[in-house]
Image (cartoon, rainbow, N blue to C red; front, side):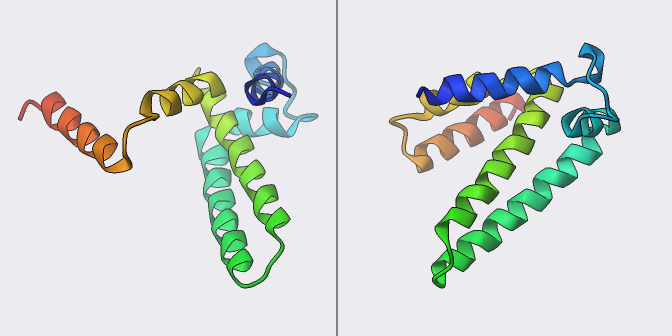
Length: 122
């Protein structure tokens, strides 16, 4: 099973549920979130991020790690709805992760700060 294939299939379903592509907000959760606009799906991302943190904390104290996987899946799913809304795909995220591969986190953060300063004309 190719992970990117799985993500792409899910992205295709999300794309098909956009109201502009015939998705019906009365019949589809994804369509309903997209129809309501960014505030709706961004709120869900915040909720799912919080639930992910709580599940991770539970694992630290003997909780079921499957709950963490479940919450991360919800977080990724709702993040994919945001990506679709903004015309992006899971491949864009995978490409960004590949770009960062081999960079230390500290180097990557320093590079972003330098690029931000450059863009601001400093």
